[in-house]
Amino acid sequence: MKKNNKGFTLAELLIVVAIIAVLVAVAIPVFSSQLERSKEATDTANVRSAYAQVVTSYLTDGGSHSMSVEARQGQSGWQNTENGKLVTQIDGKEVPRSFSAVTKGGKYNVVIDSEGNVTVKKK
Image (tube, rainbow, N blue to C red):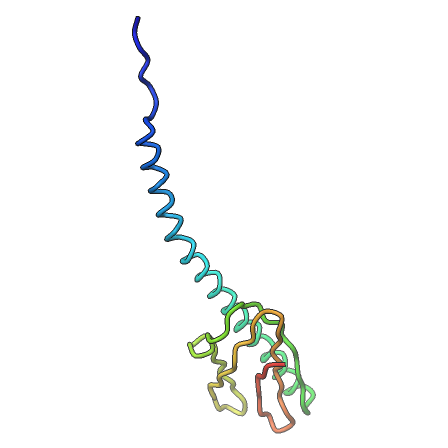
């Protein structure tokens, strides 16, 4: 009678599990980092959109206008990178403006006063 020796040994299965564990241990921090960067990019895009809407209202109606934007990212400190900069352009002048990061649950307030000065502040 022939003995059936098909299948994997316990050692082979343990090696595969160990390799998968190492791959997961490397992938989780990378995924978390990319997720946070996407939230930061979303916040910057939302602030830029609010800026465009406020400037449009200013150019259409004059006077001061403001708009609030809800924050999405979970960590502060990213405003020191290029993501935390907004370039304003009023009367043909481009001015880069930095704004502080607001973490989830907070809000940005984009304000343009009657002289055309734009500010982005934590609300």
